[in-house]
Length: 300
Image (cartoon, rainbow, N blue to C red; front, side):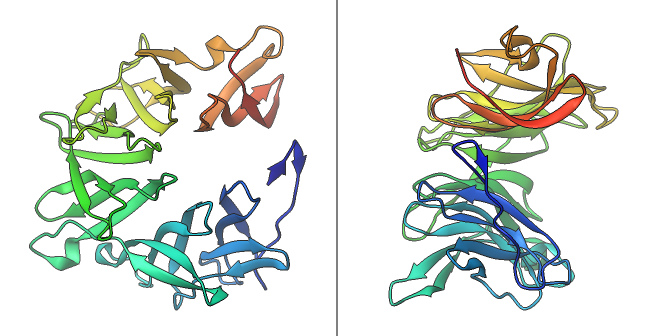
């Protein structure tokens, strides 16, 4: 974790060989996943005494995606060692008010199909009010982007695809309920914004000049979106060439490297844009004169 520019090491679970941090709240509490020696990811939350495994799932996988200000943890998990499709669940873990070391879990619903063994639903992102976005799949719809509301039933909504497309997936959601991701015609990727109207209306985002594949990966409350773009042969192959980070602002898309300040960005190529906050700052990686570093880009 970086606090005020200083790096803090969070450690690992007992007997663990690795740990990944995925989210932190304003109180400095972080969540992520890591193993206890067997390589299988378990969910952890940081405490004053080290990392704590908040959900023992009998050898399965747990992937925390967000920790809210009230300490609730949101993500997805499976208890299946085989990882079959029907075993994946979105979930929210809430601290037990009687014992802060225990968590109460609520599963998020899936879209029903005909064959239960083909049904899965996996959130990829949550916002501050614990609405979620991701994908749902079954033998009726294939795979579609999905939205979960924050009502008592965590109602799931099929976001569908762009007209005529086959599949879709959502990657991010902002606090207003706007969702971004991608829609898939045959062997192609189109960036999409699903609006926060009652119909969750989808709209395709523009491609940079010369590109015809792109995906939207994160959105802030200003509607600024980051992702990547490249080019390929739609309908022929999923191969994407010359992929590069981009940002969509006010209906226009920009190559992120092209809008770097000529002084502070001299000699730098942006290699990844991972997150954007509500001030428009973007966290990612850049290669500056041959050295790859974690960086923050701040709008001028």
